Image (cartoon, rainbow, N blue to C red):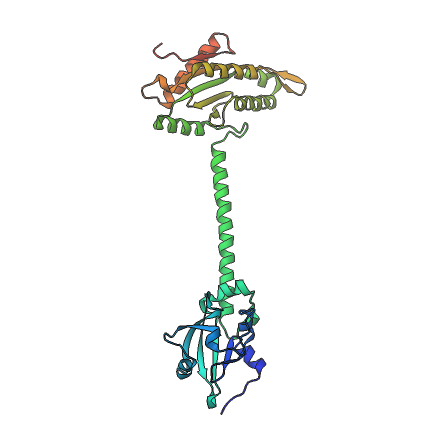
Amino acid sequence: MGIHLPHNVLDTLMPMHVLVTADGVISQTGPSLQKITPGLDLIGHAFLDMFYIARPFGVRHFEDIYALDASKLRVTIKSGARHDDRLFLRGSAMRLQADDGVIINLSLGISVVEAVRRFDLSAADFAPTDPTVDMLYLIEVNNAAFGESKKLNLRLQGAKQQAEEEALTDALTGLKNRRALDMTLKNLTEDKTPFALMNVDLDYFKAVNDTHGHAAGDLVLERVAEVLCSETRSTDHVARVGGDEFVVIFEGLLELEMLGNIAKRIIKGFEEPVHFEGEACHVSASIGVTLSSFYDQPTPDRMLGDADAALYQSKKDGRARHTVFEPGA
């Protein structure tokens, strides 16, 4: 007994169907198929003029499909002489009774994600029993979860990077801390990169803390950091390694005259009083300098010790001056 379905029922159950007459002409299409073929008037045209049969092989005439009742098809939509190879459809062809033609029920298959994006499809464009909608939902859930996971990873990476930077940064001045200095010296000496090391110690800083309090001392240290950064290059390294002790590393700079001029500018910058609550806070700087070229095999501890010895010579000689370590002295 044959069953004749109204168009609206067929459109709901098989929204991508194609009714083809016995002579191979398209007589009816489902609404979803019409939606993914914008600008193409399928009805009235030969099926094989509008669709390219990728599977089964060897289909050249509609009679080939007609003869393969219940055959599985894989097709693409033609556009002129070309076919849209981004959108593969799969389906099955069933011969109708009394030689009324063939009904071909198509689905998007693996092209569904591409089609949904290109043609703005919704759940209404799929048959009620089509699991594609559930699959799309799972894809969206997966994409959302992946997106959130990616955001979380970025936040974690950012937090990790921030924690690493904080672990290498002096909280008060924003300069490198002792740990960062040790890492820098280790890398430079291992890579045999030439550099100068300048040890800077504040004179009269204890008097500032004792007279004006630690808040005034902190303000002085912040000003010291500004002076050191203004007198160094972006490739240099400035570190606070103690309460009022600083170390500056000049990569690739071994000219004592230039280093002496930098030291003089730093000392002059420190002589500018820092005002705190209407009171002037005065400090100066004693500096010791050594060069990596003074050593056959420079080591961080040896260079820091020699720069420190030169610094204390500066203090002994009257402060507010710089001294270069003398190898062999």
